[in-house]
Image (cartoon, rainbow, N blue to C red; front, side, top):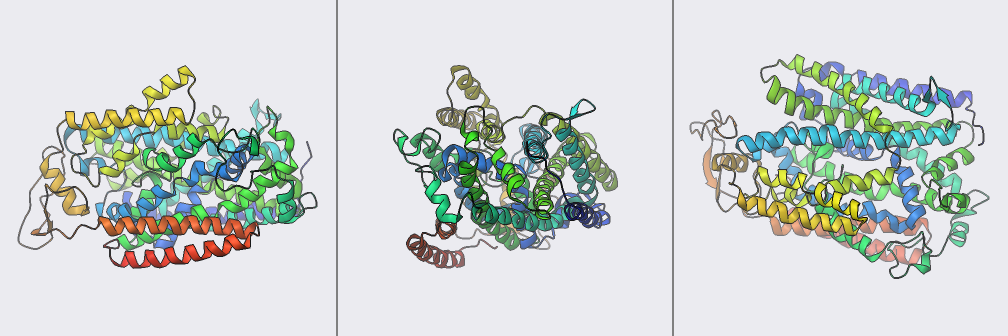
Length: 616
C-alpha cells in the first residue's frame, strides 16, 4: 500500500475547513434555541435556493461517489438506473406535493399522521413511524455513510490493518468526525445545518470535478478518447443491453427485469431516503421550512435537476477510469468502491489532497448533520412531546432535541460496525419499503386511505422479503413480488377498516387544499371573521376551535396540468442529464439533438406551470 503524507498546505486546508463549518454553525445557536420550529425548520424562513441546495448537499454523502463507482464497475453507466429511476418520483413531489407539504403546517412528516387520519390508529401510526424512520431507518443510513468514510480512510491512508486501543483506526477517526458534526448540528439547528450545507456542497462539487479532470487526463487514460478506447464494450451505454449480456461481459449491463424494476416500478413503489414517493424525510423537512409554497416548489425543482444532472458525471467518469486503472478490483473478492479512493490516492498532488479530503468530509458532514437533525425531530416532536411531555416548555424541548441528536450519533456509530456494502444497504432500504410508496402518494389525493393503510404497508414488505431471502430469490424478482404482496395487503386493509372521521378529513382538506378524489368534500372553507367551523375533533385530537372559515366553492381540479408539468419536467431533466454526458464524451451530433429536446420540454414546462395552481 502506497504511503500517503499530507503537506502543510493540506493540513491548513483541512483545519481551516473544520473551523469554518463549526463557526458558521454555532452562529445560529441563539436562533435555534427559540423553539422547536426554529430548531427543526429554521423558523420556516428558508429561501428556495438555500432549501434546494441543502437538499442536494444532504443526498451527496461520502458514500455517494464510492457507491456510483461500485455501480459503474458492476454495470457500466447503465448501472446508475438504480437511482436515476427515482427522477419520476422526485418530479411528482415537485409538482404534486411540495405546496401541499408547505400548506400542511406540520413540524415533521410524521406529524402529518394525525392531521390526515383520526383516532388511536393515527396516534399509533405517528409513534410507529417516528421510531421506524427516525431511529431504525435513520441509523442504517448513517451507518452506510460512516462505512464510506471509513473506506476512504482505510484506502487513502492505509489504515485497513491499524488498530488504536483495540479499535480500527478508521472507526475512531470517523467517530471523531461524527462527534464534530453532532456538536455543531445539535447547537445550530436546521438553519445552521442548511447554511453549512451550501458551503459543503460547493466544496464537495469542486473537489470531485478536479479529481475527474486529473484522472481522465492522466497518462494512463489519455483523455476522453483514450478512456473510450480502453473501456469494455457496453460500459458507455446509457441504457442496458438486454439478452445474454455477452456484449458487455459478465459484470456489465443490467437484465431486462432489473431495468423494468428500476424504470417502471421502483420510483412509485419504494420508500427511499431523499426520493420518497410523495415527498418525505429531510426533503419534506426542507419543503416545510421554505418561506412560502412557491419557494417549496422552486427548491424541490432545483433539487431534482442538480441531484440528477449536475452531481453524477464527475463520479461516473472516475468510475469508468477505475475500470481501466484497477482491473484487479473486478476480480472475485475485489472491492469496487475502493477504486474512487485509490484514484484520489494516486492522482492528487500536494495541496489538492487536502482539498479533496475536505470535499469528502464536506459531503459526509452535510449528510450526517441533516440525518441527526431530522431523526431528532421525529423522536422529540412525535414521541417525547406528543406522548410523554405534552406540556413541556420550548426551551426544554430544544434541550431534549440536542441530547437526542447526540444519542442518535452513538447508535449510528454502533450500527456502522455491522454494515459492509454500501450498495447492499441501498438495496435493503428499497426492499424494506417496497410497496409503501403508493400509499404515501394516494393519502393526499384519495380520502379513503386511512391510518391502517399506512401501517399495513409498512409491515407487509418484511414478510415476502424474509420468504425470498429463505428461498434465495434475489432482486429484481424479490422486489417485484414484495411490491405486489404489499399492494394487495394495504388495499384489502383499507376497505376492511373504517375510514378516517369526516371532521378530520374536512379539517385536512381545508388546510392543505389537495386535488384528487375528494368528492365527499366538494367545498372547502377559507378564513373569515365571525364564522366558526367545528371545534375539537374528538377522534384525532385536532384543535380547530379557533379556526374561522366561510364556505366557498372548491377550485377547479388541477390534476391534468400538474400531470403535464410532471411529464415535461421529467423529459427536460433526463435530457439535461444525457446532454451533459454526451458533451463530456464528445458525441456532438447526439448532444445537438438532446439540446433541442431540452429546449422544447423547458418551453412546455413553462406553459403548463402557468396553467396550474402549483405556486398557490
